[in-house]
Image: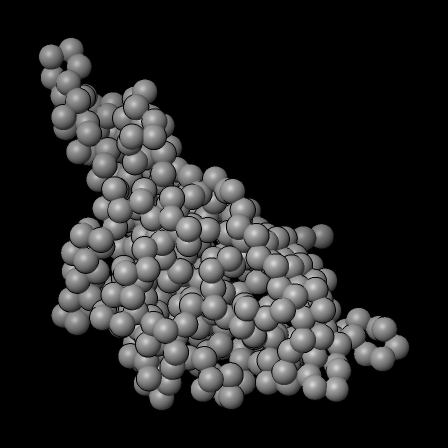
Length: 387
């Protein structure tokens, strides 16, 4: 498989690298972390309206750029390097992918052009607890009323749930007898009466998480965007695409951990010489680099599979994405821990950045499948269920 980037892809990567180095440097990240929404709205406007990044994988029929997962992975890697504080992941990698892969055509026409233009932020609630697609753990219910639907339930961990304009949530249908059925998807504005959104105080303050409670929320009939059959068929691929994007973000974070460590060890002097000259330090940095390059190959390989049009590519892509996310979670955690260790006593202090990457590594490792859960998924697909 040819992993070489085209000239256009290199331009996307280089533009993202330069822009994010300017607007998402350490000081900017720390300022955004302490803001009301958790991100700088001016930077977000430039991302969506000036650079057009929100439109990257949205087809041109919905006013998007119509590019592939490879281009999205390029952007996410650079965002991960700079710990970009923005609702990009929840809006573009989660909500837009769910709309494209799962929702009906009316919903796509209604929402995707606004996401592409950077005018609409969105998020997806995946289960009652956790940030992973767990249809068996969806307990929100929806019933039919005269004008549409009434939805009730709660979701404890919703990315950017406190600030998103649009909520996409799964809920179980309740018939007139009270029996609870299969899961469908509903999309509606976050400002409707009966919605309570409460931001969490979480370990990774560079990305906001919120609890969303729905209490007798009245929905119009067009709030139903995907039937149970559409959910069953489309959600696995949508979640795999989101997991691949998250893996690319983790890769960027791991790369920055290595870069920060190399810069620090080249300046830190001990026993009359820089610690970068010690063989033990070189070995640990080399191990970080080997892990990062292996992870990069896995991620771009999975992105190439996702972008291909070959028959049967979906099943192969699900396994590729699971392997990529597993490797990225392990690599990011390892590199963040090594960065702290090789920075010495200052590595976990507030003034230095490795602690921010370590917290992001810890939090993102549990999103869209833990490494253990994804390994089990791959093993089951290849070897069959355990006896």
